[in-house]
Length: 499
Image: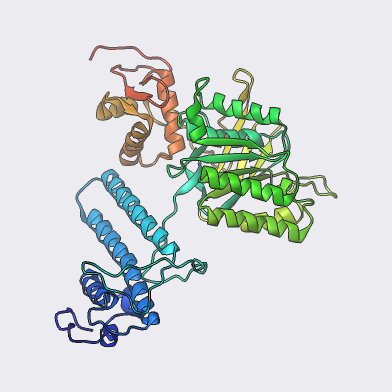
């Protein structure tokens, strides 16, 4: 292969094609300079500079080569930037921030290329060359690519978590997850809590957080009456501390009761219609059992799960559904996953499975019993008579005889909090920025302590409660800052000292 295109002018398009690195091996070895040369040569063929009769299949090969080179160039630039960050003299916190910015930029560029590639192109066998620029390539309504083949030259988009539990990712785009809970164990409260986090990042969401990629979520209740659905919607609003009459929530969360839709096909169509109209990144279906006539009909259950996978892929969203567990006839004990064929095929297809149990002290525990790409996780909640809703609670989970990590407010000594205050200063920040600053400090100065978003969220709440941090305003304009005080004795008692 020639290293430049200066002598290409006299060559026929077939000779130029011989100089293209069309093989996967050639592509994965290609560097930035080689891509520049190859791109110029490929476009000279597409533009038909010698006015030759070009076969359609050859033009298609060249177009695919151009698209693959775009991906290859994107990957090379990503690796180059990551290496630059690794070799820089910046702090580890700053390196993590820089690396995240690079990954975000990569994902945006990948999205643009991916969306462009989703609609395959067709090229006329003998295109008419324009006076300035390449030929016009018209869209061809062919079936989009449905089979993925890994290769050295193509890196799929890194999908951040749509839902996390105590900072551990649980569900991502194009995947399914299921919550298994007995009636009355708080399944609806969990769904309301997840949705409330989209409306207010500061509220108690029972350990759940929604990722930044989620701009809209839809909750479709297939079982309850209109009044019950309304009460659920009101609880979500109360948890998120939304003011009465605030219509902006409808841009983020769509609540719908579909109990009156009868028949599987009608339900499928109603759900897809709402997804197409609202364009959510998170779809919640309560419950999966409502879509089948029997959880023991194998084909019907498989059809349902296949349809869920279809909407997750077709509409680029994550699907979270719910299921009630069955009891074993012999022992009367609840099974880990809902019984019958529905539970079996859902468990196989889901990225994550959560089980909700209840102790004698009425504390509910959420445990991951399946996680495809993350670590196991647990969280706990209970009903609060004062607030009239479920709230997060601390519970010691035994693991190899060692208790769960203490909350950050208990694990960090008062002197360390004073040092943190002096380093961070008293400037006001919105919740996301304040969380980022605290997270960076803990990762840098206290690396032995947990630094998940949920742990930081709880720390901020406690710092506000005991008076180290001041919370000003209401959502979405709430700001936080350390106050100019010195705290003495224990964390629950402060004494102001003029600095």
